[in-house]
Image (cartoon, rainbow, N blue to C red; front, side, top):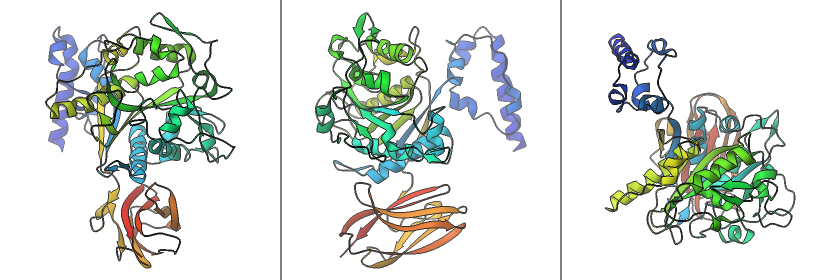
Length: 465
């Protein structure tokens, strides 16, 4: 270990000393942020305490240090055929936000995204419902909302009624599987389009989008304190790709007046810059997510999805998030011997005068988290049911790394709670809990979900009659 630390220290010294060389650009061209961070072993950190590097932001070494975290979560069970397995997607969203925040609690992780949030704050989720065959899926929205509802704000949990899910029109949203909001249930999200009666566009806050005047949705400019951009994963005949940055074409009154050809090199970054600086000078747009459960690698923006990445991509940086989304599309294009796409609006968005983010990314990959098949659970993922399939009575076995309050429940195929199996405090170690298949549960496939301190597991469970 001492030899390894000495090696790390020598390498750090080499990196720092490079600023004295006129050829620093060339010497650092192959050092990524991940390469740099891996040199930071125990005992070496003090060697790089704010070294004075008189370098501009265009230097590759500086850009590598400034790389933005992008979390990409893949799960092979996220979809089955054309069906979205919402309980699995819930795990993906939960694990992604925890990885992005670096915290083990879902609620606390979400709170870090929205500084200053209170129990009366309103969070908007901008979805994309232009193509009803490939929208921002309502399943993903519900999973986001379930996480937001775990935020403890001074002893009060955040209400789902403080979430507005929106796009251009009510008709587009209902055609994509969304249920429009009616009533005042505090546990129900408000879902409606900008054309909802009493909403509309804000003519009092015009945006100068690359020389074109655009009025933003009042949902964006007046109703929300924070915003989550939930995009789709697809190519676009005019804009090259439709991801998070282009998602805001649905946020203004006349998107057809904006450039829709040649990759929209200035219009898309200009619109996002105006949203940041004119509508929301306090920068309420806090999180960018790409729903990549399904995608279009060629032929978009319309039509049915033609590949199945089964990923959720998440970042605080819109440029970095879109850049990784484009990488996913290009990986599929390469697999099919197609030339890669390169959206000019993404690279332009990283540059002045927009400066919306960076294309330098630190990719955090999460794969197949938390779900076990019958007979495969072991170690920290141990969650078993005996006998399986469940006919009447069975026993659930699981391990806990530490003591705390635990919840064990059955979820139906849509991710809704079908039955509570156990809720209470348990110590660390292995536990066995009885479970009965009540007469109200139909035969079929369910998910058994275990949640508690530092644990979030899911397994398929068959109930037979």
